[in-house]
Amino acid sequence: MRDTQTTTLAPDKKNSKQQVIGISNLMKSFGDQEVLKNVSLQLFNGENLVVLGKSGSGKSVLIKCIVGLLNPGGGTIDVLGQNVGTLKSHELGELRTKIGFLFQSGALYDSMTVKQNLEFPLRRVKRDLTQKEIDEKVKEVLENVGLADAIDKMPSQLSGGMRKRISLARTIVVDPLIMLYDEPTTGLDPVTSDEISLLIDRIQKKYKTSSIIITHDIECARMTANRVIMLQNGEVYKEGKLAEFEKSDDVLIKSFFK
Image (cartoon, rainbow, N blue to C red):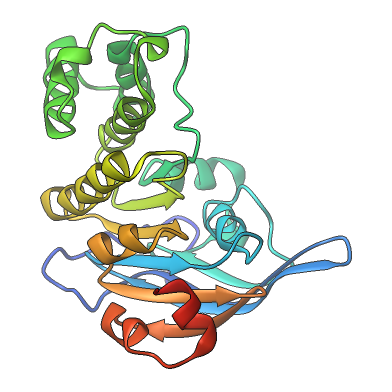
């Protein structure tokens, strides 16, 4: 029997049908409040899966369970061939190095320059890199998010959109296999939101990542989604291609896709 606690399944970049995340009958409650109710879904290799839903529908709780920040009340979560619920602390830490998590806030270190913010995860995850290799990697990801000239700036000197781009650069600098985006366009103006959505799509194509994008921003979904799942009251309400949602006569779905 394969040891799912120690063996990470590396995605085959040519196999778009390969599952990289599998969730079965996931449940999560806070006291008497059921947030997730028997949620099941799959993320396949190289796709952008958008999870839509109103505030309080359980979207952010879902991805926090995926990376073990929250413990579910039931069900199973398989990530890269490993059952997250059975992992020991150090095994969970190792798995997390393969997952990029972009928080709503961006979560940059305010006391560090942009360069230092990007160097920090590189030194922690890829300890065998030389300073030259670190410098080259930092330069590469900053160029990929269009902010090479911000390398010596402090986070306080950046706009909201720039902070989000730097946060994305810091996330991809360690070459994650999976990207989890938690409301990536929240708090941004429409133009900047579109820029971030386009960047998410470009990052997925360039780095061949598999991504879950939590959002209630329909334009973000339109610009990034290969497939869509809608949550309602903690349950999967509908799953399918974006075109299926946009053509639906369902009252709830139509309220999103105006």
